[in-house]
Image (cartoon, rainbow, N blue to C red; front, side, top):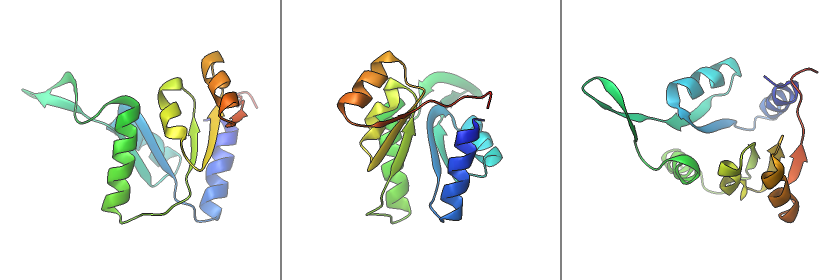
Length: 130
């Protein structure tokens, strides 16, 4: 994990700010990563199962739109309405999620860096070798 990532998670936990990981990765991977990071809330995707095998089909809405849908479902389930959202993203696919109150892109590629500059999103460059 990135040292900056651990620092931000620790800071938010000390301030009692709920932390959530939302990913277009299979849920069991997302839950395992969240557990290692001591993040309580994690949401991933699930593949449809047919004859005890995963199919290539995703349950629900996939990719970025699915992340927003899953976030909204979680907020509704937990009766959460007006919250201030900090969001960190590292791919163009998740840039739709950056319509948050406080958006930061991490190690953006050229296209995401250009978009983040146009939208005044913060950019951070994290390094695993720190």
